[in-house]
Every structure is written in structure tokens, then in C-alpha cells.
Amino acid sequence: MRTPELTPPPSTPPGAAQELDIDRSDPAYRRWLSEAVGKVHADANRSADTHLLSVPLPAGWGVDLYLKDESTHPTGSLKHRLARSLFLYALCNGWIRPGRPVIEASSGSTAVSEAYFARLIGVPFVAVMARGTVHTKVELIEFQGGRCHLVDDARQVYETAARLARETGGHYMDQFTYAERATDWRGNNNIAESIFRQMSAERYPVPSWIVATAGTGGTSATLARYVRYAQATTGICVADPENSAFFPGWRDSDPGATTDTGSRIEGIGRQRVEPSFVPGAVDRMMRVPDAASIACVRALEDLLGRRAGASTGTGLWAAFRIISEMVDRGERGSVVGLLCDPGERYVEKYYSDAWLAAQGIDIRPYLERVEVFLTKGTLGQASGQVRGA
Ligand SMILES: *Cc1c(COP(=O)(O)O)cnc(C)c1O
Image 1: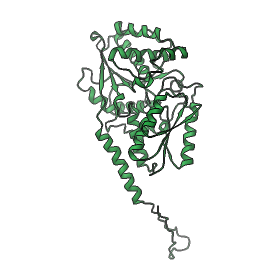
Image 2: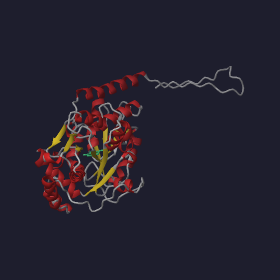
Image 3: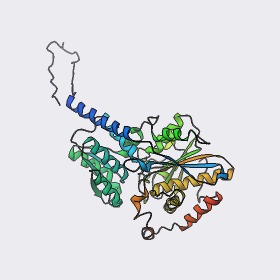
Image 4: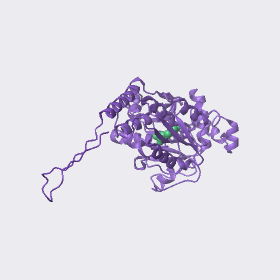
């Protein structure tokens, strides 16, 4: 970068405003930036859209369920979309510089995807994560050329990431602030636009509901803004796990809500209401017991022959509840949920009976309820249900 030269013109009359001009343009940096943006574009150009899977339900119900399969992105989760958006946003804002590291606070999946994009553009990457994150994600981050910095308390990730960025002259990406604004919510093949395009030839092309979950809140914000912008009647439901601050924060209109314990459902449920969560655009929220989330992903394996992470189960439980209400009212239509990441990452967690026992989680009552739902269309009442509040 050139040092700007400030030579006061001799002709400035006394008392007049001094004319100033600082030029910080740096052609070498702009060439690097242009190449980096080009590499991210080229990666998108090589990528195919994700499938919208149809989940078989009894035909007589007149309700169709679909899952947007985000596990087929190159880095295995819906965070691939987010990481691409965050890198483009940060690059175009001038926040990422050649040779300087990108640092992120993450529960794992975002870091896997960001490590991929950091390597793509040739900058170092450091993920700050809680020690309890499954080891598979640490391995995936390291496989993508990233480094992991583990902290004991999940609530330390933000400050630690900010500090590491200060100390190294790097950039703290801060997905929990920027996820909602980094994505082009009006279109540009975002997840919402893709769902609507893929639904267009179905018998109920405009979903009655789309069910999301919230980690950053970015996905639900994109879906909610898009359906409003597209003037669709679709409702947006966010399913939230135990120990998450999003549900009480939304219910009580309290952005300061916090919880004492971390979420056991990786990828979703935060101990604070993240700035990137857009509560006003969400139509409905459900708190889903962890046992129900895990029972649902176990049941999904029988339905689709596919394994998924537990956040997919959290959304699936909420989708089942909505469908049971529609069946009960004789209402026809479609519901779309998300398959967020693959179950293979969690073989020693959600698919391990030993882990469930150690956590004191009994999924059997929920497995039975899912079985009743899949045959009769009824899920049973939620213990706490409020309408229109
Ligand atoms: C991040 C994440 C979510 C939620 O997505 P957000 O857009 O961050 O709210 C759901 N499931 C998994 C596995 C995730 O990693």
C-alpha cells in the first residue's frame, strides 16, 4: 500500500476548508482479490444443486413431505452455502487479505466448509470450537487444511476467535452475526429459490410450511424473507432443541435470553440469541425434546435409507406435528424440511445406544409415537401449545 502524501496547497485562503485526497488503491491486492472471487465463482459453477427428496407418506393423507438434501454439498452440509456467501461478503468488503488467516467460531460444520473455501483462495484457516464437538469434524477441518483451536466452554468461542484474529492480523468471520446478511435472500439460487423451483411441478407446489432449525438463524432468515418477498403464503417454522435460547428469546421477545447448558444437537441450539437470527420473520417456533430429534433421524433411516445428523430430526419432528394437524383438519398440501448434514459424522453419538444411555436419553417413547404417526397420521398433543400468541 502506498503512503498517501499530503501536501497542503499554498494557495488555501485563510479560514477556507482544506482540500484532502487519500488514494489507498492497491492494484496487486485487487488482482489477488479478483482471482479469489473468481475461484469462489468457479467452485459454484462446478457445483450442482441439491436434491429435493420426496419422503413417502400414506397417499390418502393428501399431504406431501419433502426434504431438501443439503448433505450432498462438497463439504457435506448446508454450511457450504453459508461459507460461500460469507467468503464472498468478506472478500468484497475488503476484510480478507492475502496471507492473513480467517478465524471462525463454530460448532463444526461451518468450519469444515470455511476451511474448504480458505484453501480454495489460499489463506490459512483456524476454527475455534468447544471441546465436546465430535472428533469427525476436527478431522474434516484438518483434512481441508484448517487448524482447530478447542475451548472448554462453548460460550468462549466468540471472544477467543476475536482475540486470535486481533493477535494474528486475521479476520474473524463471525457467522453468528453475518449469516443473515451475507446471503442474497431475494434469489441468486439461494436455498429458498431452489426449493420453490424444485417444487414447481409437484401437486402442491407452494408449501404450506417450510420447517428449518437455527444455528446462526441464517437459513430461516433466508427462507422467511424469500417467501415474503415472493408473496407466497408459506409459513416458516423454526424447530429448536432443548437448552437453546432461540425459543424463549422468540416467545418472550427477549434478544437477551440465554441458557446455562449447551445444546446436544450439533449445529443448532445456541446459549444466546445470535444476532443473525431474525425473529420477526419467523411464523412459528417449536421446542423439540432431544429424544424426539434423535428418534426422528433413526426413523428417517427406515423411511429413506439415509442417515442424517440430529438437527434433521429436530426439524422432522416439527414437520410431523404440522402434518398431523393438517391430516386432522383434512387439509391438503405440502411441507418441506431440510436434511442438514450426513449421519455418518455422528455414528458414535446419535446412532450409538451407549451414548444415548450415558446422556440419559430414552428415545423409545418417541420412536413409538413416530410409528403411530406414520401409520395413523397422529402424533399426540404437545405438552405446551399456544396459538396466535
Ligand atoms: C448450521 C446448521 C443448522 C442451522 O442452520 P443455520 O442457517 O445456521 O441456522 C442445522 N443443522 C446443521 C447440521 C447445521 O450445521
